[in-house]
Image (cartoon, rainbow, N blue to C red; front, side, top):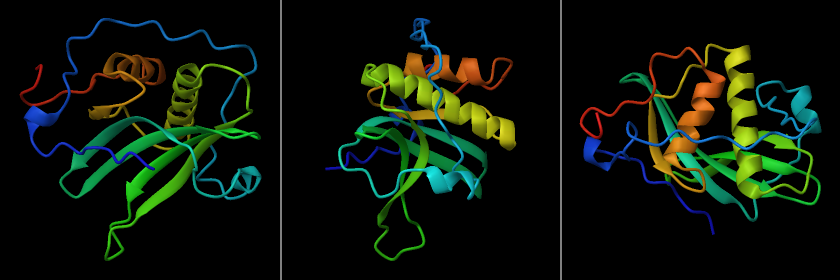
Length: 175
């Protein structure tokens, strides 16, 4: 069963994001790279298909550029025999019953590494790939931690956007 993320509706519900120990991310093995071509229909032809069957919730991050221009991504990882898969789960706001929908965000070979390590590397690769191909910037909030801690998510953000001045800030929590 899918674990649905909690979307904070008040600043007091946002997890503490400012005071965390700096963490070291796991060393990436040579040659491990996630494909993150979800916006490229030609490259996406090689991607695995179907919805997740045994996903693990990683975290939810949010971008809020304006009141009418936001993005909230809940990330999940799944290991299949053929691939590691990184999914974005979200509510379909265009359906009457707000169905849950899945978007394949990235995939990698099914190397025998720890789930948490692969989740870090894949999220880093996908964010970096999207930042390279679009104007995708550093997330504004971490709405919820899952398998990945707030400290790990912030460390990934620092790797992808090393000069970012807008590390996540909450208006009243930890700020």
